[in-house]
Structure formats: C-alpha cells, structure tokens
Amino acid sequence: MLSICKISFRYKSKHILKDIEIELNKGEILSIVGPNGTGKTTLLKCIAGIMKPGKGTILINGKNVSRMKRQNIAKSIAYVPQSSPSKFPITVFDAVLMGRRPYITWKPSQKDLELVARSLKSMDLHDIALQDFDQLSGGQKQKVLLARAVAQDTDYLLLDEPTSNLDLKHQMETMGMIFNMVKKNGVAAILAMHDLNLSSRFSDRMVMLKAGKVFCTGEPRQIMTVENIKSVYGVEAEIISINDHPYILPTRPVNEQQGLSSD
Image (spheres, rainbow, N blue to C red):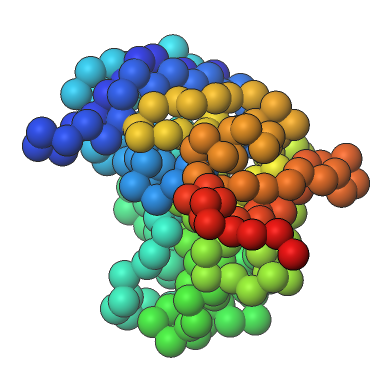
C-alpha cells in the first residue's frame, strides 16, 4: 500500500499542499484532478521523493520515503514527468533502458534487455527503437517515457499528464495500456490529469484538489457532480452517463451567468 499521511508543502511563504491524505492499493488507478496551480505535479514529486514535504509522511509498503535511498525509491516508484528534455541525444532503446538503471551494477543483463524490448513492444515503439529520441514528436517522446517507466518494473507508477501531447486516438490507446498494465500486473498508478472525462473512464478513484487541499475523493460517480465542478472549476456543467461512466459537458463559466438573457 502507498499511504500519504497529512503531507504539506510550501514554496517560500506560499502553501502549495495542505494536509493531503491518500491511500492507494495495488491494482488501482487513482487520478488527481483539479484546476491549474492546485498542486497536482507537486504532489507527485513529493510522493516520488523529488521534493520533500514540510510535514507529514509518505509510506511505501510501510517504509517512509524520506528515509529510503534514492535507488530503493526508484525500485518501488516510477515517475513520468509531463515534459521531456528538449535535447536528449540517445536512441529510443537507450532512453527506455534508463528505466533499468536502479538494477544495473555494471552492464545490462539479459533480463534488462528483455524488459526493455517488451516495454517497447507494449507501447508500439519497437519499429523506432534505434531512432534518436530528440527527433521524435512530442507524443512519441511521451510514449517513450511511459515505456521507460514500464521497464523500471515498479509497484507504483506516477504519471504527470500522460496524455498531454497525444492525439485522441493515442490518448485512448495510452490510457488503455495503463489500465491493462495495472489490472494484469497488479501494480498501481497515480495520474495527475486535466481531462476529467478520461479520468472518469479509466480510474477506480479520483481525488479532486482545490487550492492545495483535498476537496473530495471517491469513485468517479461520486466526484463528477454538477456541484463539485461548479465549486472547484467555476464552471456550470451537465453530467451524462456513457457506458456507465459519468461524462462532463461544460456549458459556461459561473461568472458569465450574470447578464445573460435567454432567447
């Protein structure tokens, strides 16, 4: 289990996160949603040990992240950032092989190479394995970073906007791959997401943040309500059901209600 126990984070005098509490079991997908600047990326970085919370604890299978060596954290948690470096002069294969770095002592083993090949195939990247990473499109780079996380072979995946640079088809394919990996391999994933409808469709649970605090948490049907969307996003919306998943249809910002006349 991954347990986030009352963590808070501030940058200078500004509170970014305040008393966040979340628990995640293996086999679950949890989406973190909320407006821009509400702390989604900061929360993922705190969980991954990249940033240190001002207070609170993060436990991985009962072990405190703040007391773990970086290498051991990397064997438990794979973090995929929203964007990749603009210059990364290595091949796609080598970029994915970097996911095996916590396990490699001298040179890659046969297991390392097999896991990389499997990851490339699972993300449909095997045909471009020898291409330069720097020459790929933004969407392709994002898929390579996800393949690297798969090759890292951890219990927990932290994905910051995993579909941000992908077109509609590849958004669905990528979310489907994440879903299948979690359910078939018994790992767990936390996704920072802007797209509420993708989150609703593929998540077991959602956490909605507002101003750095947990506003509400629960299954998508509990989170995706007209009242919550209005309170957190300042948007009037309709909620419909498609294939038993709630789907949001935004209508207008709350502050535009005044002065609008009906025809």
